[in-house]
Image 1: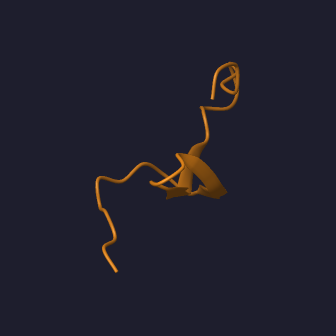
Image 2: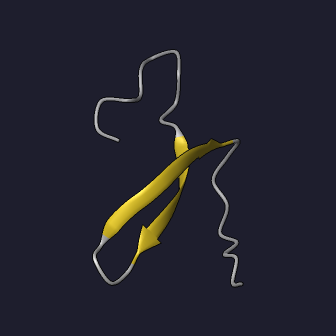
Length: 41
């Protein structure tokens, strides 16, 4: 997110749910930190 980082706070990490058919972001949730793990239902 552009402009979200400040000198005191790092940029937030967001987990998003995406509808691939439309490209719409359904929801976003702030998470504790960056991870390279992906969830496959």
